[in-house]
Amino acid sequence: MKKKFFISLLIACIGLTALADDSIKSKCPQFIAVNLSDGIILPTRKVVSGKHIAPHLTALTLKYGFKAKGNSWQDYEFGLPYKGIGVYLPHFSRKEMGDPFSVFLFQGGRLKELNTRTSLHYEINLGASFNWKHYDTFDNPAFIALGSSVNVHLAGSWYFKWKLSQKFDLHTGLSINHYSNGALRTPNNGLNSLSAFVELAYNLHAKEETKLMDKATFLPPKFNKRTAHDFAVMFTTRTIKLDELENDLMSKYPRKRFKVAGISYSYMLHNTRRFMWGPSIESVYDESANASFWGETDAHTGKYSEYCKLGKPEDRFSVGLSLKGEVTMPGYSIFANLGYDVLHPNKRDQRLYQIYGLKVYLVDNLFATFGVRSTNLTRSQYLYLNIGYTINQYRKK
Image 1 (cartoon, rainbow, N blue to C red):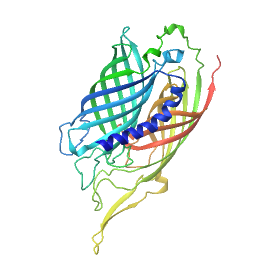
Image 2: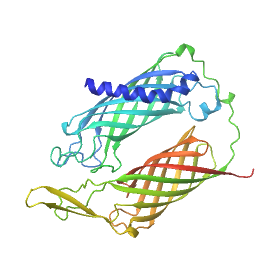
Image 3: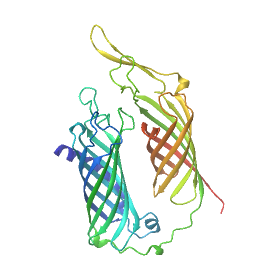
Image 4: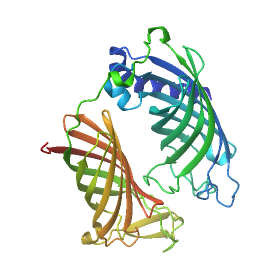
């Protein structure tokens, strides 16, 4: 437990150094929070093979963050946003799942002010989860949800904020957590949990915070509608799950990694400050398409080996059309695509696909995106990193 805690603090400090620099320079109000939650693993899939009782979990979360000062139109336009870094320490009732922990970045904001002391808020967490006792054919065959000890941790929360005093706030709400490695290692059925929580936040510089001014004091400038042409390239790797055992294989989860590359173009209509949408085209080269596998045991040594034969080169390319929506925030955006492969020689994956991700502008119009692509709304294909460029076309007033 001590080792896990100190590793968490080390990773948190490294991430916080980069996150906090601009916020400290601008003297943003800071806070710390302690969160206690209790919940269950959602029975969306078999979490533990042969066991259908949803495991129970309790968790402790520690957070450190920065709040908007409320002295600009952007603060009110985006719900007085806050951001920071946290450590999530869950405990599961099933020993097959191990003793994981997560380090994550968070961002949230106000959805609606109910009265002077009560408001409704949201929060999004994105980070990495470590130390899972993952699936292993021999050592842990029962836990079929995750195939790797390190996984992506994504969470969303909705909560009521109760202002107890100038220094203390109480938060109560619900959170949904998702764990997945995006098929970087199979199995990757994923893990989803639902929890109720109570959180106590302490405002470190409450005396320095000025009273929030009337929203009408800060009128946003007129928004210039535009069309954004997004071009991006993608490189990643993936593993696959076989539908059934074949050709003397010992497992449905071959360990071979396959190269994946792609290019995409999105025609985005940016008509409001908070949202843009449009059609997109994605062309993907997937080395795993139509690959075949077999296993052999050497008669002399008794050593088992697994072999793979790639499909034909022309069968590794797919082209899909999708509809993309993007929620924009200062400095980043969250997006999702729903698409269909019109060129699809791959017999293993479905034609219907989805893409979810986070987009961050690095400098001027150069951006990076991190996300996951899945098929048929259920099966992850791969995690990916895109590098892209936006060409803006402003419309005449």
